[in-house]
Length: 610
Ligand code: G6P
Image (tube, rainbow, N blue to C red; front, side, top):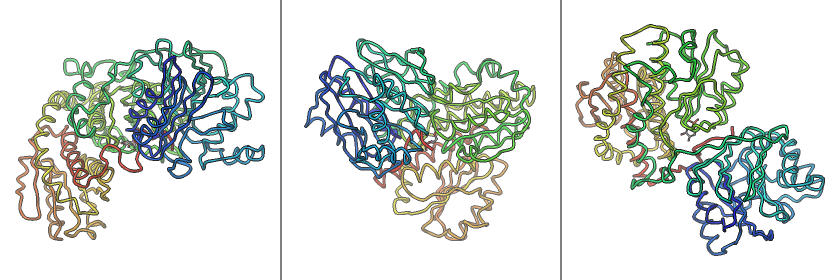
């Protein structure tokens, strides 16, 4: 989704802004722009549709000079992707604004600002902000108060950065619903929607809270809270290295992130299993006492994180013996749901900023849940800051839009959560011991699964001309099939659907023919024989099948049936391990099709608008 970078310094900052935008490219965007001001307030604005490199080229040609500036990558919500709709938006040759989020009352504001004589040059909701600030500047003593006054009239979500050519040498930024961090340098200050953008220039960050407005000059940063009172926000040193966003020699971030999975799991479990038991504070202070009382788990998430939650439902109900529901956050937040007694709300999120998941958490706080737990990959995120309990994943930055390592790390954390619930309740010791052993062995098994890369690469050629694909699984492998289908559609644009294999004859079987590859996830478990019957039903209809099987499943490749054998591992970690060949499959199909693997069309990494 949209990205913001801003800087105020002694030195020229345009290159810092462009590099910041490059580092935000992974979030997904369709146009980009920059405004820089020199010390006299002379302002240059350059915007382009398309990639940051197109903007960078234009910037190089025009070489604008400036020591203060703001820049943006836009992911269209209101108004098509175009240069005219790209940010920054400007008012009266004086104010410039970049904005993430959606202003819900933009139509009403547009009408009243137009009646006041402001001319609109774009179709965006954002443009109302800049004209509103312009209008309010006539009655406000300075830029900060004009921005604060404007925020009082905005309904919706925003992270914004504003400059005024009549007061160069300062940036005013405001946050409500869309994250912003302030970066502290020596004699220079920065702002960004994601600290990754600023790692080449600083490692010291403060996260703005909801309703904060901050004024940045090169010498100082002053912050006021939602009521306009001065506040200070803690400055923390980031432990992410500046090159964490690099591809480390891989062709794509996605491939790099697939191979990072064993290490990400090791880091995520480190110190959290002690002598075979879940460490006391692994899920946050007081979690053990709380878990003793929990009788229901409600999981809420979006996208890949939702699929991880679906796997956890099988584990929690089977091993902990309590009920577990899983719901897509955008549905949960808009319906009246039943809250079970002694219920734990669990949000799953790689980014911790997904708008619907965050809204679901905020809603749940008023609904009577015993507590909220988030399993999240970003320490500074809103979900982490607003949840009662936190299990921080240590997957490292995930840049590829198609989530890979975050999914498997979430699954490992959810298996650990099932174990922690059992331990707190002093039940199912057999499962607790088995889970500890299986999790410890997991990174090694993942490394073994990487040996399948080349055979899957060869298979992927056969998908190149296909328009549709079906993924089948049973039990805890059904959500793995869902995730496999999601990956394929996200990055190769092949329409893919997942079905619980038993549901096949209730509809999807009608679609099966030689042009519809069917992918089956088939570990050796108690449902294997049932799955084998489903496979026969499909084969009898002339389909081409790809079966990812355990080596002891006794499947043989033959015409119309390609078998990829996985080394056998404990059934508890099978959903995690079987995800790997499906990740390779989607990656190599996308490669064959020549799509943009890391930044698939229309998608964003962090979905901060609903
Ligand atoms: C977007 C991303 C997906 C991700 C989903 C939820 O759609 O492209 O990869 O699974 O958001 O994101 P979250 O950060 O909450 O896990």
